[in-house]
Length: 124
Image (cartoon, rainbow, N blue to C red):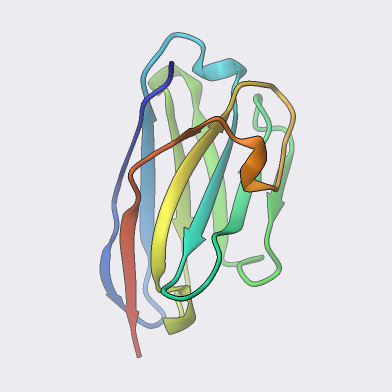
């Protein structure tokens, strides 16, 4: 069992930055692929960024490419999402997810564990 706890959300002006953190419990964090998803009101949950177990492979949604960066520190059991040049359309609840397998995945159905979510609000 893996528990995920996100932090770092908040209110920021357009053009600003935030860094989300997701700390995982368990001793096998380094073997998990990780992802960040978001869900805005009235919309489906969508993948923002994903990473394989080693961090050697990453994926970004077109809407965040060049602005967001996913990274992980296996020694700290933590995955990060650095968000720069934020836009009002980035406003959503952001979720961290873990997949009990090494390969990168983009679909939410492929992830086994989810955090509780953290709200990100970007004002115009």
